[in-house]
Amino acid sequence: MTSKFINKMALIPSAINLNFISAFISPDSFSITALAACTLVGGWLLHNRASRQKYFPSPPSDSLLGYMRIMPQTYPWLTFMEWGKKLGEHHGDIIYIPIFGRPVIILNTAEAALDLMEKRGANYSDRPISILLGKMIGWEYITSLIPYGNRFRTQRRIIHQCLNSQAAVFLWPLQIQQVRTFIKNLLISPNDFQSHINRFIYLAKMAMAGVAAIGTPGLAPVDLFPVLQYIPSWFPGARFKRKAKITHAVGKQMVDEPYDKVKEERASGTAQPSLLNTLLEDYENTYTIDYEHELNMKFATGAMFGGETFSPGSHNRSCSYKLQYSRCRSIFNLRSDVLSYDGGEQLPTMKDRPNLPFIECILKEVFRLMMRDERYFPNPDDFKPERFLAKITSSDNVRLHALNTFNIDDPSSLVFGFGRRICPGRFFADANAWLTIANVLAVFDILPPIDPITGRETIPSFEHSSAYLCIMQQTKGIRLPYYST
Image (cartoon, rainbow, N blue to C red; front, side, top):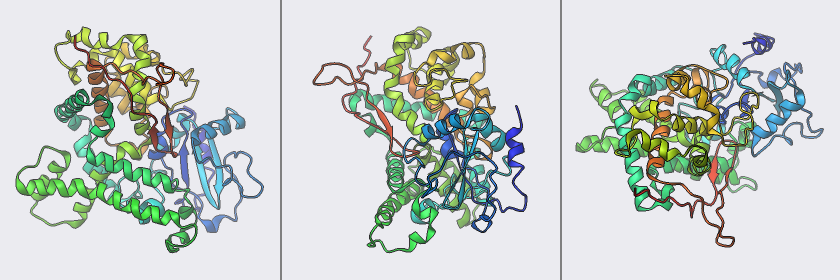
């Protein structure tokens, strides 16, 4: 792969203090997951603004407010994609825009992200401290948000020891159990699938919805002008402070409740198998008191609860799962694929995965939903799981290989981020997604709601309420008829 991106970054003088660039990874070529997971940190301090040299191309700015006026507040990846096209094939890979003195670097292709985040990960693994998410919401110690350093490495080790590729295999039985519980709940009330989500995941969604209502982290007014954090809540225009106070309470619940609940259950002897239970058991066996380690355990596991919603791609996938299936059923007759393998005698488990290639195709296409690089994914607006069939059937271990390496045309290798900030729970998340798809399709048909006026099926839409949060519209009325034969 060309090193042109690395060569461009090398133009930045070494004397510049690298600690304050926010970078957006545009789903022009890969998942919006990378938007949240691959924030680049580095760049110019405000006192270096005297140097106006530009190292990357920029789109035209507004004459009055510069790029602040044209910075997209919704669906930013579409705007970034258009900027890239206008700047040309060889100039739109990396885009530079200054927002009130803060340089923002947009990585518009997977190649650019790989060159910088992987090959020079040691330089670009840091994170700026967000006033909004850190001080105001109270997530200054959440793994995905803390700067690169000892605390970050400690929390990553905590997560990695529980969710690495080998450890994740031992969690399959627990995941299967939870998926079966989910299936049973759907049988009882199929139209209430969102209410069957675990309470703690619900708290995470509530917290992230609160953050979305305040602003985009890194570009929220309080992040651009930190002095705003000190204005009183009653001050005109300070509604964001009142919202932040409410979100802070929910965010604290998201982190504290699972931790406190498991500790109480351990004290009463009723603790169920869980990652946090294992961590606490190992900690108690040291017979020491280490408040720093307790804090790291709490926030590392809290980051896992928030991961499903903080990662915009994964949340978008959960929104997309439920009805995109109905489109591809006509292509694959997916239930026949599932039942022909085991004769319909049992629900799919992970051992069945190599024998269900069509399910693998669906998973990759769900991962791909926000990837729009037509060089690798023609007709990106179409849901076409079959685009991956030839590759899947030609490889015996394409899934695990994809999670451990990077292939520009494989969504599974891009959707979980890059470099030292890559999602440490990707093996667990990948297995959970596959089990859910396979089991739901083995039991239910997924049909859209019927419009009460026209009597026709209508596909519910899903929208991003911010750069990283997706909300499913019209969830009621979705039909999940049970296969009785």
